[in-house]
Image 1 (tube, rainbow, N blue to C red):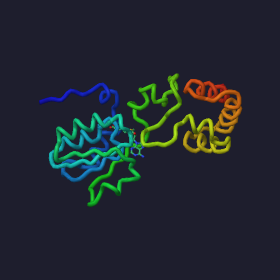
Image 2: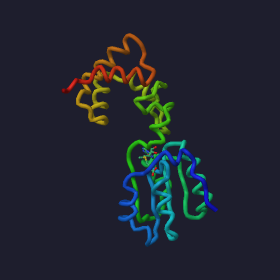
Image 3: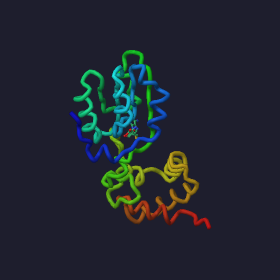
Image 4: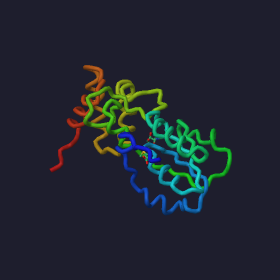
Length: 195
Ligand SMILES: C[S@@+](CC[C@H](N)C(=O)[O-])C[C@H]1O[C@@H](n2cnc3c(N)ncnc32)[C@H](O)[C@@H]1O
C-alpha cells in the first residue's frame, strides 16, 4: 500500500541526500541515527534499504506526525524521539554505524510564518525550534546591546552586527519589539548600502 505524503513532508527537500546515502552505505545495513529528522528525507531514504534500522531525533514537535507514519510503516526498524541531539546519550545504549546531522533550519519551519523565522512574517517574534524556554522576543527585548551584538555577529555572521544591536537597543526604549516585521525594519535600516 502506498502512503500519501502530507503537504508538510512535500514542502521540504533534503539537500545532499544522494551524497549522504552514497557515503553511509545503507545497502550493507546497520544502525543509523538521524539527529535532525525534519521532514524525514534522510530517514526515509535509508529505510528503503531492508537491513537498516533508524533512530531519529528532532527537537521540533511539528514533525512528530511525519515520524508517526514511519513508525507505523517500519515498526521494528524506525523509532523517533522528540529530544535535542545533545541528549543523545539518554537514548543510545549500544554502538551505532552512522550518525547524520543535517544542521540548519528546515523549510517546514521557515514556511510556517507563525513561527517567526521568515523575514516575510508579520507574526510574533518566536523563532523557537522546539524545547526552548526562551523566545526571540525575550532575547531581543531583554539581552544587553553587547550580548545582542555577539549573537548577531557569531551566529548570523553579520558584519553590521554592531549597528543592528545598537538600533535594536534604541528602538526598544521607545516600544517593545514584538513582531518579526518590526525587527526586519530595524535590520534593513541598519544595513550599510553597498553600491
Ligand atoms: C535542515 S533540517 C533537517 C532536514 C531533514 N534532514 C530532512 O530530510 O527533512 C534541521 C532540523 O534539525 C532540527 N534541530 C535543530 N537543532 C536541533 C537539536 N539541537 N536537536 C535536535 N534537532 C534539532 C530542526 O528542528 C530541523 O527540523
